Image 1 (cartoon, rainbow, N blue to C red):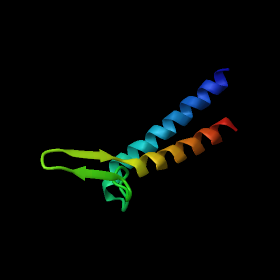
Image 2 (image 1 turned 180 degrees about the vertical axis):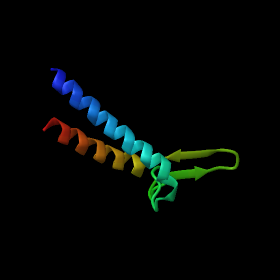
Image 3 (image 1 turned 135 degrees about the vertical axis):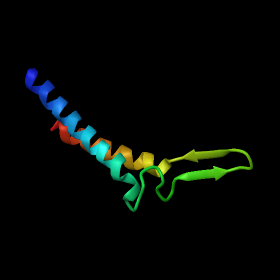
Image 4 (image 1 turned 135 degrees about the horizontal axis):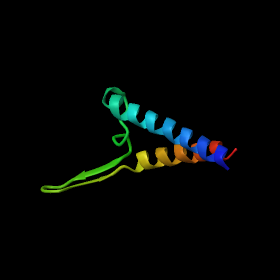
Length: 72
């Protein structure tokens, strides 16, 4: 039981480090997460509506793959 908790904490730590690096160097990347081609942005006269559909799909695929790998 303790071995599983330890592995889970290590995996969460690695994920947090990777996310931190992405946020730190994210502006210098060619494709910014949250501003991918296919994300919907509608600008009105006084308002704006933004729906990151492609970003959501990409994150869903990546997280599903990660969860599948961790279950193995």
